[in-house]
Length: 473
Image (cartoon, one colour):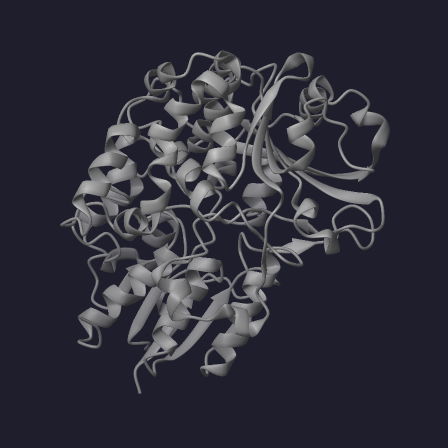
């Protein structure tokens, strides 16, 4: 029987394991932590009974993918839940904007800027499944839907600062700024619009759902299905080299590129090793989870109903903060992502005490404490917030990096989203999952299509391995 070892049990590692196990391959997953799941884990971080997501919290790209269609995780307990609004962006004075699943309602809420929102994002939503079919795989391929991809490219290629000029109001520009900030790139950088446009279009097609019971539910469902297919997982096992993996026919590494070089060692061709050592990681995040009595008292009404709230002020203020982070300087008013998952999934709360998920964008490897800055940014748009906080759980950049070796320097998205790495990650090649050693593959978020608990990096890498064995088209 063909055997495989997967190193790392994040969503991509488990997706790779499932894809191989489905074809009758004997799969073992090795995880260095004491719990499987990588970025898809949840825990009671603040008060008993409050469920907090430890990293990945929202999953707009996980609902309808080749992996999701092949594996029915709902049969193993995974349930998606949606808030009334997908995301919001408050401004000073109680102003702000919000986006829902409905394009029409979102467009109506943006007034004179509504038609431009329709042109840029609303028009892509009905075609998003076709669009995702192309960008959830390596970008260097013959497009299956060239017209839709070209339409996406027209919005995605310009810098975010350029695309934002199609909107004139502070509200619409800020709403787009929150999307663009997910790239963790300066708004003047090429392709800095791409991730924001994709996430915005996905919100109108699939929403930004959360997993009922916490993101750990994704892991539990994948583990249950893997066990059913005969695979097994060993936790508390740190892999330092290939010699520790025995004689497995396939090895898939859900690791950073640097870790892959260390594990494979001298067997990796020097040109591949050099390219992976040059792989760039992005800025870090500083995370604070709160237990909040009665929720956040946002002055902007729409923010009270949104699963995600982007906190940073105007487009110009968010752009300034992202530029400072890219330069290695901590901004006085950082961009803060706030997750109100309990609005979609009340099971995470205890009565009127709710879990609140927040992180700030900070420089890579930053050693400071952003707790006060995060609280100040929320208080700015929600006066009285501090008075409602019952407990906090703080994870510094160093703690995040130590807790998951893939998060180099606190980079939770698996690599810098610069123009080169958006197109050619993890190295310039038509075979991004292969490592130059027969039977050895990289399947982490450093490979296409990048970050997210969608499992598509693992699916794609496993499919490449199966093709090499002659078991897949």
